[in-house]
Every structure is written in structure tokens, then in C-alpha cells.
Image 1 (cartoon, rainbow, N blue to C red):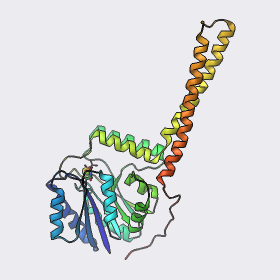
Image 2 (cartoon, rainbow, N blue to C red):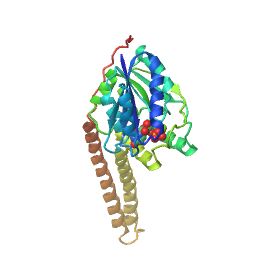
Image 3 (cartoon, protein in one colour):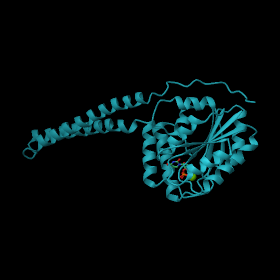
Length: 307
Ligand code: UDP
Ligand code: MG
């Protein structure tokens, strides 16, 4: 059977070809035919040309090159779209996803796992701040979306059926890790320690990571939208209390001249604006869920061994 290795690459520099060769060599012992789909995410160095050169000498290698940098999620999507294998393994070009685990992943797949997840044991190269930020993101994501993906990486093996399911999802903004988890198919988990980077520094900076985190949270939860409704209700409740107090002061004659009118107006107007925004938010969240067009359910398929 054919196994595809999908590797997104962006400005991986001189190390790239050596890394790709190492990935192929590590996958060979699994005893299946191999295909290596390298997606060049618009690198500014000569990565694409180098991979094209490699492909001339090795018919298992295929290059998909983007016109510009579209981001890792797009690269992973393109890789899955172009992969033809019965199983597809997605892994980073910088060897931070240890290629020696490939055989083990394939074994789990042969035993019948539809998805094999490589879960990070600990982040090796991350600073204290990065580790703390990552932890914060995962716990926020878990609270809002209800899915726990702490430690999950994009290092995964997907069975052909799961790849097709993933590609059929109609939504445009994709969070590979989260969506595969959302599909909920039967899987196996193997643990690994993140290797230090082989090659250039990470291509993510704090701002791009923050944007990525925000996008991912909002792709799975509309809760931030509905928070406004609760704030509106709270404002209204506090408002009514103030209203009663102001009216009481007016009646007993202890209120300052004109103060009651201002109080009452502020409270009523503020509260109703907030609540109306919240109601609009609810409709927006419905539109948002509908527009993603995710399937209503995913059918379970029985586990079967693959020969
Ligand atoms: N990558 C990509 N497009 C990007 C950024 C990264 O295809 O815009 C690739 C990169 O070449 C690598 C993988 O995604 O194979 C992970 O990137 P990186 O190592 O920079 O991220 P980190 O290991 O810090 O998560
Ligand atoms: Mg990396």
C-alpha cells in the first residue's frame, strides 16, 4: 500500500533537503510504498528549486509550490489534497517531529487505528513565557470549545477515509489539529519529546501566534459573542437597582436637581443597547455556525486490520 508523507516547508534553508532525505530513510523500514509531498509555502529562499531538483532524482518526491506564503494550515491542506496514499502522515520539515516514529504510526494504522496522534510530552525549545502562553491557549480553547487538545501537534497519521472527510469539510479557515479532533474518529496516541529545531529559527512570532490562537478559538466557539448578552443583562439589572434608588431619592426629596433624569436615561439606554447587541450577537453566532457548513454527524466505521 502507498503511504504519503506530507511536509509543509517555509524558508527551511540549507537543511531542507538533508531533512527530507532523513524523513524518507526513516519511513522506508515500514515496508510500504512511499510518496513524499513537499508543499513549499512560498519560501523566499530556493527551497522550491531544491525540492524540484530532488524530485528529478527520486520519483517518490513531489513538489507543490505556492505563489506566496499562505500559512502552514493552507500548506497542510494542499498536501492532503495532493497526497494519494492509503494513509497520510503530516510532519514538519525541521525534524521537530521525529521521523523515527513513522514506523510506529504505520504499525498502529495497520492494527486498525484511523488516526494516529503524536502528542508532545514536553516542549523542549520553548521559553518559560512560550510554554505558559501555549498552556493558556489550550486551557482557554478547552473551556470554550469543549475539546482538550493540549500537547497535540500537527504530527499525525490519517487514514484515507479520514483525509477524505477532512477535505470534504466545506469551511475555509482550518485548524488542522482542532478539526481532526472534532471529527472524533477512532485513534491511537503515541507520545514524543519535541526535538530541538534542525535548521533556521521558528517562523512564528508572537503576533502571528496570537492571531493564530484567536482565529482558532473563534473557529470553534461563538461564546465570546454571547458574552455581550450577559453583560447587557447585568447592566440592565444594575440599572434597575439604580433606577429604584434614584426614584426613591426623588420621592424623599434627597436627590440633586436633574440627577434622576440623567441616571434613569443612562441606565435604560445603556442596558438596552447592550442587550440588543447581545441579541444580534446570537444571530451572528447562528450565521457563523451555519456558514461553516460542518456535517451534522460523522458515522463511526468499525476498526479493521490492514494488511
Ligand atoms: N511552515 C509553513 N508555513 C509557514 C510557517 C511554517 O509551511 O508560514 C512550516 C515550516 O516549514 C515547518 C512547519 O510549518 O515545516 C512548522 O513551522 P515551525 O517549525 O516554524 O513552527 P514551530 O515548530 O515553532 O511550531
Ligand atoms: Mg518547528
